Amino acid sequence: MAKAIRLKNGFTLVELLIYTAIVGGMLAVSLSFAWQIIRGEIKMRAFREVQANTDFAMTKIAFALRDGQDPSGFTVSSGILYQNGLALTTTQVRVVNLQFTSVSNAYKINLEIGYYNPTSRPEYEAAVALETTVVPRY
Amino acid sequence: MKGQSLVELLIALGIFVAASGVAVSLLIAGYLPGLQARENSLALLLAEEGLENARITRDNNWNSLSLGIQEEDLSLKLTEGKRKLTVESAGTDRKKVILEVSWKSFLNQSRKIELKTYLTNWQKQSD
Image 1 (tube, chains in turn cyan, yellow):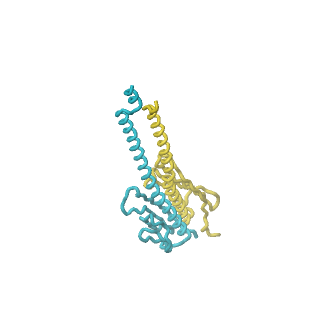
Image 2 (tube, rainbow over the protein chains, first blue to last red):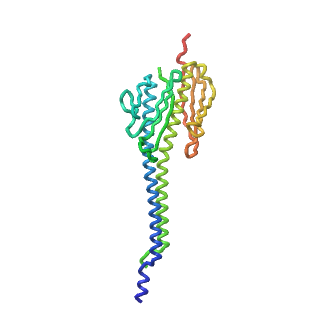
Image 3 (tube, rainbow over the protein chains, first blue to last red):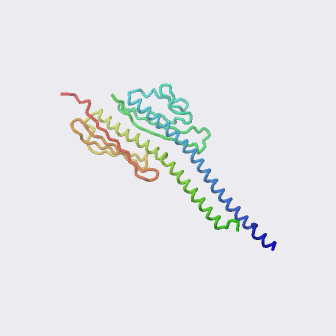
């Protein structure tokens, strides 16, 4: 009698092992998912920052050149882009390339901006390169 | 019978997996517009560049802005990227310029941006 009750209420060692294996597997899968999502979010944030900076800088440059201003108003100092001394990009990004090529009476603009990543960590690797041509309006 | 059977546990596990699958797919779907934005802003600037090139031609010589279609390869910048310039007559000293940039997105969908403007022969000397 006493033996039967003990069998009904308790766990066997095999049941405990199966349970542990299932929970362990679930934890491992969800943790790796969570880790991937966190890394993805970090990378997307870096990418969005770079994208927003590049779009903004390109808009400002194109606007100024259409207005007939000289490209020498735009300077890059330790990776930060300045328009007549005012910073156009944030400290989170670095200008990799800014080039003005004279075409006829227009300018071809090449702009590349990357995320500030001094330790070369893969999740911070993000860069956007844009190019366009702008004709000054008379 | 107070405990859970293996079947119950498996059902619970199934629900959990389905729910997290939905959550992950929503998350990924949330990233796509951001990645699409990169191609869009690049394509828009390339389209504007095409229009500005037509403007340069117009400024140099009105007559060299010839009517018809011109295609240009942009595959180095966008997957299967193409830039198509269409110039149509729109009356005396007036031309309609249509610039289309088309490409294959990273999801392998066909995408295009179309810009239109009218250019006039503003440098024409009056007789």
